Length: 189
Figure 1 (cartoon, rainbow, N blue to C red):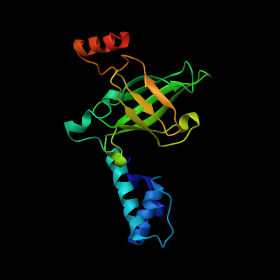
Figure 2: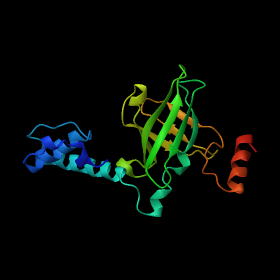
Figure 3: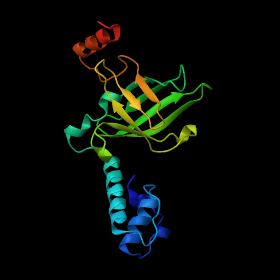
Figure 4: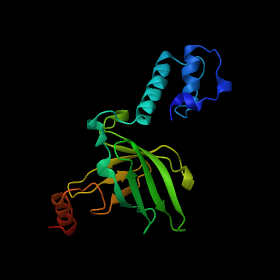
């Protein structure tokens, strides 16, 4: 959703440039409002945050960014919820994803997510930005992806929890050679 759609029509009124940027950022949930006397550098930060958010909301236009996140698709174990798996699915060719799961109560939930390519926010790794509010958790939780040499992926969350991909659960293993290599790694061969 574009930021302009977040602001109700009744809120549109003539305002100064600084106030418009700050109000727009707050209306879209990007940043908390700063005092009217905020330094010009804060204005620049708010504008940069709005630009980064708009970039994430826009599907990639070239093939180079279409592969971003494809390696983190799959099923994961969650050590904070023993026996409860999490499945990350990405809408092909976009930055949009979903996380499916259920906790110990067996009630299924789905969380919206966005894939951020390496370099986003100054982090040199792919990230999965998850909105856990449907299951009573926080919004915009950033999990940093890592790809160990043993194969698969891990997602490290800010609270220290690390999800580990179930071997060979990534549906993006298309070729027979990729599937064989995955199975060999899973067996420890």
